[in-house]
Image (cartoon, rainbow, N blue to C red; front, top):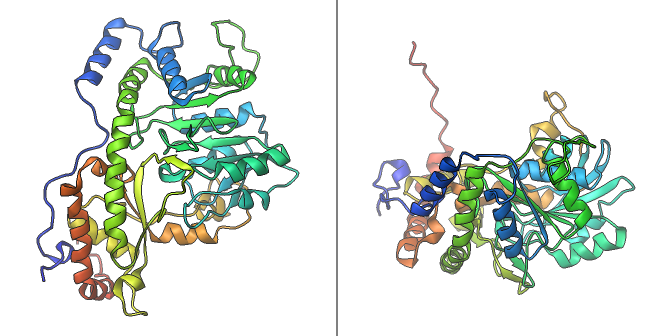
Amino acid sequence: MTALALLGGPPLRTRPFQPWPQFDRAELDALADVLGSRRWGGIHGGSQGEVFETELADYLQVPHAAVVANGTAGLMIALKALGVRPGDEVIVPAMTYLATATAVSLLGGVPVFVDIDSATHTITGSSLKGAISEKTKAVIAVHLGGHPADMDSLGAVADTYGIPVVEDCAQSLGAAWNGTQTGSLGTIGVFSFASTKNISAGEGGAVVTHDDALAARIASLRDHGRPLGGTPNHPELGWNLRLSEFQSAVLRIQLKRLEAHLAVKAKGAAFLALALSRLPGLMPVPATLDPRVTAHGRFSFAFTFDGEAFNGDGYNSTSPGAFRAALRAEGIPASTRGLVACPDEAVYADITSRDYSSSRTVSAEQARVACSTLVLLGQAAGSGLLLEGPSELTDVVRAVEKIHENRIRLRQEQRRPARPHVSSDQ
């Protein structure tokens, strides 16, 4: 039995997987064109930003898209456009990137945390219904990891109570629910184009909607409160959250590659889901796709790790942290640490925190379990691993098998007390 790389043995894989984000000569040429144009920013007719907005709106089948500085800015714009004011409540999943909640807090609103479905790690209509109060102004549905939330049940409850649904599509560009793209299912959709996302310009975002009046407000809020069309008047408070022409030019190229990337990643994810589900203690999320998920965004390949099942003895357990560390040491890019449920982040949980903010938690049990046991591969770990074929992805499976063979040794190692740190200055 070969020793684990974490414990001094040779790593199973030494060559890298495909990188992320990806680019080629097309992006370089597009950047050079913008540079030569000397029109590097602003909002103007025929701009890269305007053309990208049209192309994105066409892809999503929505009439309105506005590019913005980043996804968090997009959420703030969406919520302010919907009239969220200080003291208003916005329902948010207990498991999501913190920015989903802080976008509410930065407007003076109160995020209300609700639990996730354990199978998909997204919220449902039942979790939404149990959190609604007279202060509820909106709900944010997060399509986590590229998996669409149950927009049927969410939409039914939201419609009954007259609550607008903001879709947080930061990780789901290209995903579809019943054949309809995420972002075009709710009242407003918000996308991120940060470095790990399905298309990327390093930073950037977009806000999309079917509603003409909301679209006008969104465009105004991202440009100092100035109505679209170049008017010098500023009838409301807005931000400067415009996107540069360089970023828009890159995103136009990236969008052209999206469908090809999604097709390859779907095959890679299917291979890993089948292979890893045969190993003890590993459960892909979701275990099987709901037939209403007609396309998965595949931002990441996620699976939960059960340390007791992995060990097979019923009472001893390998920690998820030790498993992640062992996987990385074998040359498999995986998430570096466990996640934290939003209600447990210091800004909401620690009253002594410098920027402690008001929140309300309805439930978060499933979210806390998922955060502590989740292992992420792919873009979430800064890797293009899912673009590989089975011949390369087999190394992921072999690495897990190697760790399983060494599970007793790994468990013993994780129980050892940490060595005292000695400063190099002594």
